[in-house]
Amino acid sequence: MGKKKTAPVFVFLILAIILLLLAVLTYISNIFFSGDRVPKVGEYYLYLQESDELSPDVPQNSLVFAKEATDTALLPGNKVLCYLASGNLAMRAIYNIDVNEDGTTYFYPGTNEEQGSELAIPRTNIIAQCKWASCELYDYVAFVTSVKGLVLFGILPFALSFVSLLVFIVNLIKRLCA
Image (cartoon, rainbow, N blue to C red; front, side):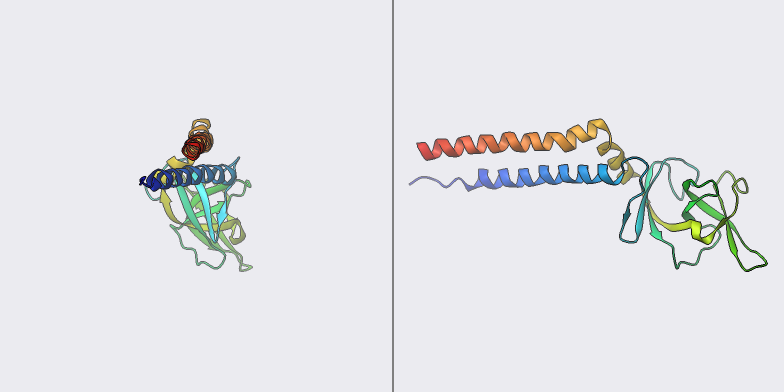
């Protein structure tokens, strides 16, 4: 009576699933963060903060989770994702809020180093408020969107899965023919 060899099949399947999942996450990350895109997942924007302008609250080289701020009350000191008067999207701290005579509220964005160098912006320019930042997730995104990361996590898993599948099929054919 021969032994059943279910362990190698199970190990192969687990390995193939892990490798393919890794490749899929790599491709999703590359699609999400291609160019200067700021993806939105649910009500959170994912912003790659590369400067140290808001450290230590928002560390340099961190992936920022910024919650959509359509109905959020904003206060001085809040870290927000906003369109500056120049039209550029940036992470800034609100250092002052001013209400004009006509009732229009303007927010003054700044950094830890500079307040007052950027023009005031209307509430509609503020799209999200910073809730959480992770340097580790930034490192992951930076790596998998690089050429090395794409090769290592995007192409290599498919190649290993393909080779493993071929070895599995050859061994299966040998066992069936024996």
